[in-house]
Length: 335
Image (cartoon, rainbow, N blue to C red; front, side):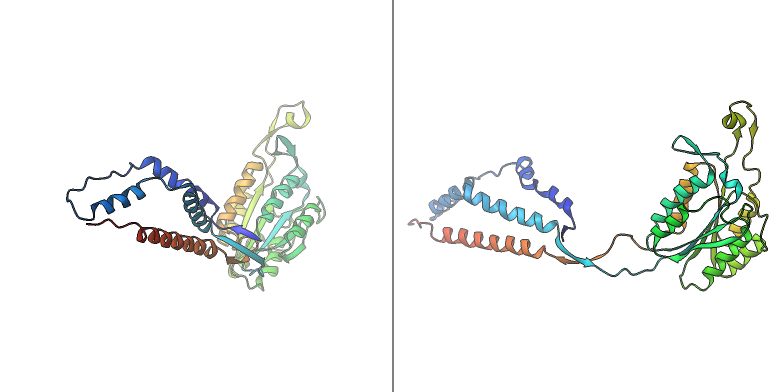
C-alpha cells in the first residue's frame, strides 16, 4: 500500500514563487575596469539576464516537484507485522446488586439507571485499551468471572452488555470481588496489574472483608481503583411528579471503605455522580495507567523517496552539463 510519511511537505511547493516575489531583483553593476575580453563577458551577461525559455523553465519546475515529492517521504507499506503484546492485565469488577437499577444518572439529557450508564461508558473505556488484557468480574451476593483476561476486547464488551441486575444476586460482596480479582491476577506475568471496582453500595455479603482483600492485593503489587456510583441528591418530584422532597440516593455508598481499599494498594478512589464525572474518571485512569501499545497495526515500510530524489539530481546534472556546453560553444571575440 502506497503512503506518504510527511504529506505536509507539500506546503513547500510555492516556495520558489514566494521567494521570487519577496526578494529584490538582482542588479547589474557597470564594469569598473576595461579588459580585453569585455565584449564576451557582456554577451554572457545578456544571455543569462533574460528569463529562461518555456521548455527550460519546465525543467526547473519538474526538478522542484521531484524534490518536494521526495520530502513527502513516499513509502510502500507491506503486510501488518505481528503484534508485540506488552500491555497491562486489568480486571474490571462491576456491581450488579439491586441498587444499581436506581435511575439517578444523567446521560445525553435523559435519566438512566446506574448500570445502564456504567455499561455505556465502560464499554467505550474498554475499546480504548488496545494492547491490554481485560477481564470482567460481575458481583452481587457473590462474585463470578464473566470474562477471563483476554485481548479480545470486543467479546468483553459483549459480555458486559449482556449483564443485568440480579445476575449475581442482589446484595453487595465487595470483598469477594476483590479476592477473586487478586486470585486471577496473582499468577500473571504482566508488569502492571490493575483492578477497577465499580459499586454503589457497601459490603453486606460474602466471606471476605474488603480491607483484608486490599492488603492481599497490595502484597501482590496489584493496584485497585475504586469508583463509587450515585448522584449527590435527587428530589422526589423528579421520580413521582408530586412531592418535592430532597433525598440522598447514595446513602448506602460506603465511600470510606472504598477510599481505604484504593489507598492500601496505591490506587485512587473516584466518585461518579453523572456521565461527565464518569468520563473524567476514565480519562484519569488512562493517565495513571496508560495503554502501553498503540492500537494501530504496524507495517513494514519500504522508503521510496530515493527514486524522486535521484531523478531530480540526475536532471540537475544534465541541465548543468547542457549549460556548460552552451557557454563553452559561445563565440569568442578578438582582443
